[in-house]
Image 1 (cartoon, one colour):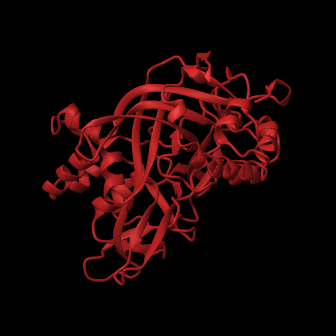
Image 2 (cartoon, rainbow, N blue to C red; image 1 turned 45 degrees about the vertical axis):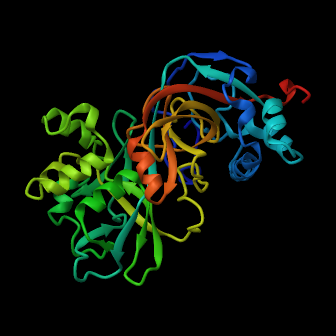
Image 3 (cartoon, rainbow, N blue to C red; image 1 turned 135 degrees about the vertical axis):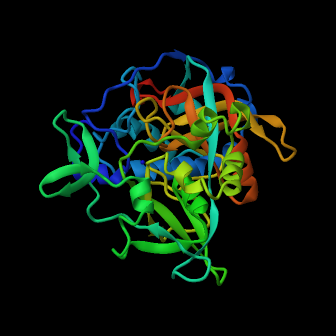
Length: 381
């Protein structure tokens, strides 16, 4: 999940920046498609459905709607900048030719860094019973956004006419929201909840074997503190050993310290029951279902939503070895800890292997952003 954007449009683009947020800049170098390592080996047939899904989403928004992106980008920061590319897509039969006609590659002049995220599968119950004692909360009605005196939008709650920060993780764990009927499900472990909140959405496996999706529905506005960083600072984990698996293992091995450690991250995420198809990923901040291996979370102050990105990096293979990975992905989501030029979080899907790849993906690489061309500048394929 800017400028002159109505509240309705803001709701349509969850996570949009506002006109009061500082703009960013990024250094770019135009390159040709022949400079993209592995471009000719891409599976172009799989790209047209993703591109058409994006253009369908873009046609639902007013042309002046900001998509984000650094102020130094030459094009592609507003929905209207996609008009030519989306019109050209209607008759496109070959994704490679289409992309080379309607997009211009620009290399981001900084080393890229890639991580991964996935959709966890978590045992849960719709009622509080047996081992299911950890509440999964829906968004509270008193969680609101307001404009501060400096013009920035802040998240909090009103109390006796005063705007205050919303309850932090420790307060919520201590019962600040109990008894308000906000529980949409019950989980077996607070560690499951913690990692579900990091991922932002997940699949709840109910006792009868059926599944429902818990989708992101806001956060408390408190700062996000990466637990891996805290464990390194406390000399509990070596920097080279930090992964989702090692953090979970530490928490489960220290039940007496588990809650206090997790509460050092005051950020708290709320959920809703998502009725979207389980055959696809959860809906990302751009408003389209995420596609495994094709969707990434980006910093919207640098990269606009919908933008294709050519990625050259390495992913862990089934044997745990980093293997070259060169593919086109799409900016369809955002993440609390995804900040800066060349930074992206790859959606790996769901299931055990998706979790393994996401948990072990920490690789540098190269990033090339493909910006749509103005209609008058589009060459003949």
